[in-house]
Every structure is written in structure tokens, then in C-alpha cells.
Image (cartoon, rainbow, N blue to C red; front, side, top):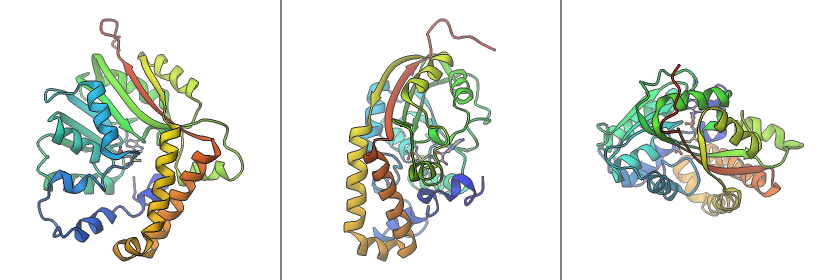
Length: 283
Ligand SMILES: C[S@@+](CC[C@H](N)C(=O)[O-])C[C@H]1O[C@@H](n2cnc3c(N)ncnc32)[C@H](O)[C@@H]1O
């Protein structure tokens, strides 16, 4: 998908080079090797940064033997964090060319190309290998993807019997009204936004057993309010590092997401589901 069509036009994705601005600001020369730790403050495009990924690793009891598939892997932040801290192998799938190119560059420079494999493709059509993954993980990506029942069916088929699905995602906590409808569509690129019951029904219908469905709206709303305030408070610094256009685009994005959470229409959830151990069907 081209960087500036549809999804690529979303405010969060139009200035992906801002991670290189941050590395330059930290004194890392262009193209130079770096440590994964130097990236973690900037490469996690979800809420609560690496803490959220640690929670997944602990919940899933990942080990260096685990084979993990990440859907919508962005700049590669969660995948590199898992590979670096747990040592598991992560296949990191993203649909955007530019995202994939930057993620691959950062992973190579961080010395993790042996444990993180970046793949470019659409989760609705990418040919996943034989059902071999121990876990599928995804942060803040599934609401971008149009056909969730089909996606969930494909993810179930990619998992071994007894394998796990761990998702953090946005959902419609209450019907979106007025300006919120356009903001969800164009600012969040929220293509698939349903209530939590429908979400859970689709996960079950795809053949998973839902183990946990946690409400994250409160902590995520607070995180987004703090994020917007911190961005504005450091406006001079961010304009110097990223330029006024990137600063303003992100200020608009952070403010809109904060408002959607505060209005109570936008919600967040964490899902844990498992493929049954013996009854997995083949097609
Ligand atoms: C909010 S970002 C999250 C990135 C990463 N999970 C993280 O937490 O840092 C969502 C990502 O999902 C990707 N995405 C959206 N639709 C996709 C699809 N159909 N297949 C694969 N990736 C997709 C986007 O390109 C974007 O990089």
C-alpha cells in the first residue's frame, strides 16, 4: 500500500521518519548500529510502551523457543522488544511499505535480524506458513483491518493446537456521533469498530476459546490525556526536532484521540484467546 493512500494518510503514519529525527537528536549517526534500548522510547506505537509488551510476554509465558506472529507490527517495536528480552522468534507483518522498510532497517541496526523477520503484506491475504505459530500478538492494528471474521479465521489456522491469540485493540464503547464519526474514519482509520460483545462473538466463531476480555478504556484514556499534555508542554523541543508540520499533525492526532476516549465512545480492550488443544479443524 502506498504511504499516502488511505491508511498511509492517517496522521500517525505520515511522518514515520520522526524516529530518525529522534535518533539524530540522541547522537546516533545515520545508518550506524544501535541498541534496542535506544529505540524503545520511540518505536512502540500503542499505549503504555514496553510495559504492555512485557505483560503479553508474561501472560503468554513466551520463551526463547516460542514462535510468534505479530499482526500490524509497525516500526517493529514490540517484535524487537520480545526478541531482545525473551529471545523468541517473531514474524512481524505490516502492510505499509515505508513502515516495513524503516522497521527492517532498525532491526538490522539493532542486531536482531536473526530473531525478527519482517514481512510486508496484508494480514487478510499474506500466505502464513503451516499452522506453526505458538502465539499471534497484535497491538492497535486490528481495527484498521476490514474483514475481522476472515482475519480471525486465518489467525486460528496459523496457530498450532493450543496456541494463543493476544490482542490489544480499539472498539466502539458507545455509538460514535457527530464529528466523532469522521474522526474515527479519517483520524483513527477505524475501519472495524464494534461493541465488545460482537468482537467476542467473532473470536468464538473463528474457533477460539476466549480466556480473558479486559476493559482498558480507563487506563488508555488517561495515557492519551497525558500524552497530549506532554506533547504540547514540550512544543518548542518537538518543533526543533521534527519541524512545525509534524508537530502540528501529531498535536491534532493526540488531541482527537484524547477527546474520543473522554467522550466515552472510544474504548480499548485486551483479549486473550486459545485454539482448542484437540479439536482444531483443518480445511
Ligand atoms: C497503530 S500501529 C501499531 C504498530 C505496532 N503494533 C506497535 O504497537 O508498535 C498499527 C499497524 O497496523 C498495520 N496494519 C494495518 N492494516 C494492516 C493489515 N491489513 N495487514 C497488516 N498490517 C496492517 C499498520 O500499517 C500499522 O503499522
